[in-house]
Image 1 (tube, helix red, strand yellow):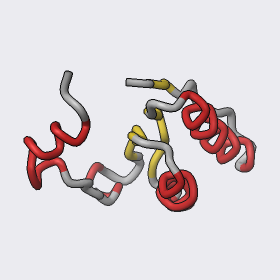
Image 2 (tube, rainbow, N blue to C red):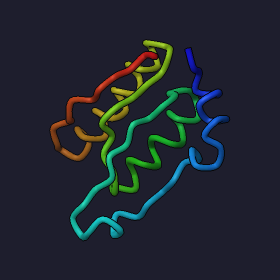
Image 3 (cartoon, rainbow, N blue to C red):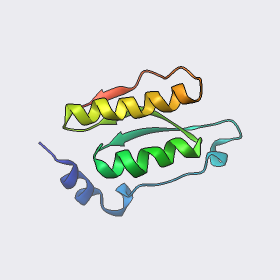
Image 4 (tube, one colour):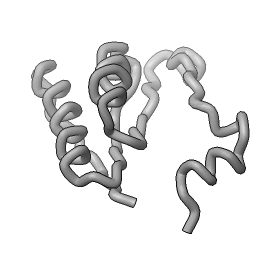
Amino acid sequence: MITRRKLLQAAGAAAAPMFVPSRAFGSNSRITVGQIGLGRIAQSHDMPGVIKSDMADYIAVCDLDKKRIADGVKIVEKAYTDRSMSAPQIRTFDN
């Protein structure tokens, strides 16, 4: 089994997070995001930042801890309900 750490070490700099402005994809395109790891930093910094930018949509969350997965889904769903929008089906992964 390969771990995230081993995958990132093998991939080197190519696996570093990459931020691409939505204008690079055309005027009406949005970036889709899958959050890997839903710990304290993800929930208090990363996810709120992506949601606040209003340039991307979360489509998936992943963590080994099922409670963190549920918390991540709630964060995304709340962001949509706060905007009076229906939340998309968020795919969840625990491995």
